Length: 53
View 1 (cartoon, rainbow, N blue to C red):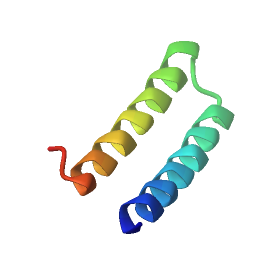
View 2: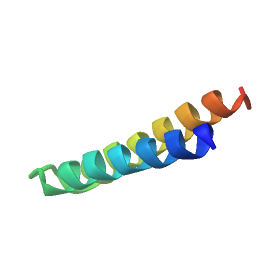
View 3: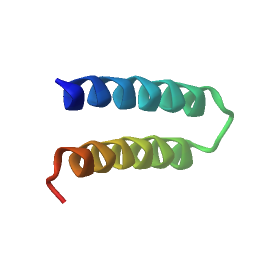
C-alpha cells in the first residue's frame, strides 16, 4: 500500500511539472522532450522504490 501511495504522489507531482512545462513558451520540440523526460524520471523513481532496479 505504501508503494501505491508513493506512486500516486510521484505521478501527481510529475503531472503538475509537465503541465507547468507545457505552459512555458518553449520551441515546439523542446517542450515535448522535457515532458517526456519528466515522465521517464517519474517511472524510474517508482520502479526503484518498487525494487525493479
